[in-house]
Length: 164
Image (cartoon, rainbow, N blue to C red; front, side, top):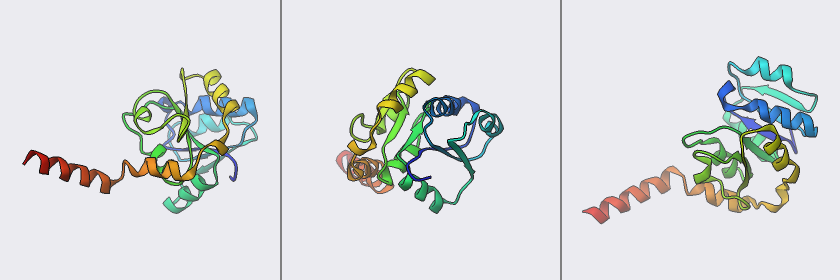
């Protein structure tokens, strides 16, 4: 698990984990897949020897996986997406598809990198150039904290006080 790229999600076809597996197979990069779902069998069949499926894990074990990983790979378009923030809260960068909520949470060059289009080639290029040493854990954690429940409550309270 240590030094691997990481996927943490429900394994559904629309999330495009197939491109992550194909890219990691091509580059012979270690990848750990945490989660279950209807696309699990298909993904396991295409996975090469550098890819491990851990299934569903406890929250504590997921945090350990984040901390041991090089980066989270987030290949899907989500309206928001909590998993990149969870990775950043653990001090890890994110490689994300450049669409959807990741555009609001991932800061390129600071808390992660983007790939576009949503293809094996684009992801392979990004992984090939990725160097986790350029990302600082404290910067990732600060970015995640901007989306915390406490910060949200404070901002709502400030907004209401301004209106009243």
